[in-house]
Length: 330
Length: 308
Image 1 (tube, rainbow over the protein chains, first blue to last red):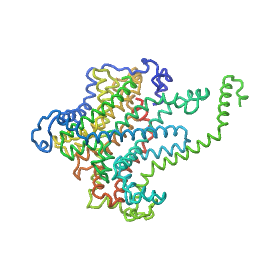
Image 2: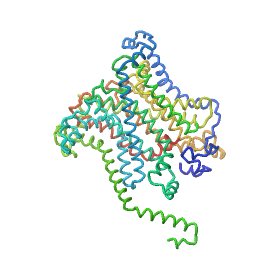
Image 3: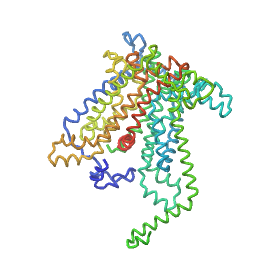
Image 4: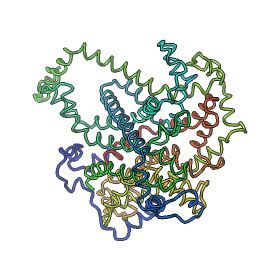
């Protein structure tokens, strides 16, 4: 691909500039020319549209319809559902349990996202300053963590935090002399349950953030940094004035993705509850929808919660979509 | 040194400037060396933090169950045993492993192949053609990714049930293709965009037809993109849990994540060594796969997903 770039970009340095401000006004060199294809593009899109329509579009319509209905076990087995219109929504929105779940989800996601982004950025910056060998070491470590399936990593961390035989209690008691951690249950208390869940999620999410930001950092041109250094800008100042503006679009997109992923977290919470949490006190939105609909059989209320969650996520994602479409010059 | 290159005034100037920068760097050399040393040490600590859970999983799985339940920690499998794997793989009292492995492999590979094919066509459509609602399609692709799977699960369940495809490979594959597709289209779109149309046009001037120009020139250049995207699809499908839990709950139709969960629920705290053996069996193939393709993947991530 590099050969292609060298061969064809008429004005490579400017056109390849990654910062929006550094980008020249959109010219024919940058924008891909597209031809009118008549019927062809629609034919090419057909398979994708059919699959998405059937498995995403139609269920989405059904979900919204169900959320306006009284829809329980009886309806699953064929009884005609009764239209209750906004009753499900009114029930959900006046239910203190729902608000507790919502607030818990937002707080938990917020803490996870901030921790992930801060640590991920620090590690990315650190990687630019490491020697090759140490950078490779860290890369391998993060790849291993990244590659772990979420369910597996939850199970493993659950075992490490195990009350009786977990390595963490053992080390806390025997190496640090903290006897109160002898047979300490990490998952019974909601707050410490979420500490464990947060550790699992952040541990698994940092590699993606660090790799992405590191890749962004390597695209900051050295000449600009050197010039700033010659002009007497210190390390922090260089980061704030040069590196960060370059990094900002990538940083924002990564952060939004983290927010969305953490708000809809399911596997880690669900599996950790299996290992030993109290479900009622540790549900997040994703798990709560599952508990209400699938486990509880109340598809009407579950549907209402699902629609509210989807609206919440989509309103957050508007920013992401806008940013991305602006970046991409669609 | 500057004396040697003296004739080239300009070159000499640069060399002098470089020398000055190097000297000023050297004055703060002690502190700089300390920082480098500290950062290297920190990277080793971080490496340990990232790797430890993976190590602990493998370590536990290689020890007898009564050993890991002692008060003493074994940081190394002193009493090495493969009995946990034997139990997990062949004990008739448990949900069998091999059918679950087979299901996971078949569903994942089918998903990757079908999703790549469909996404490739869609990516070509949105990058190479102008048509009404092109923008709408792209924005829909982005928005669809935001809908939480748990929200859709009941309706998806009813669709699949309506087709009598519950507990089948086909049903789960269709759902996974739809799940993976938006991201796959988006990423591939970036890669196709990265190959200039001018290349195709050059080939056409040299006598290729439009479609053969595409297949002979653009398509080979997309190989890294297809691999990177395929890997992401693979990971998503292999790790997927909620849909599989609801759609393929029967033991004979389970995928590996659901299989691992039955293990967890049934054995909970009693047989951690066995659970770790099961976890290792599920994670190791992914990890190996990940390490093999990682170079291509991170570069793909940057040029495709992030930069476009």
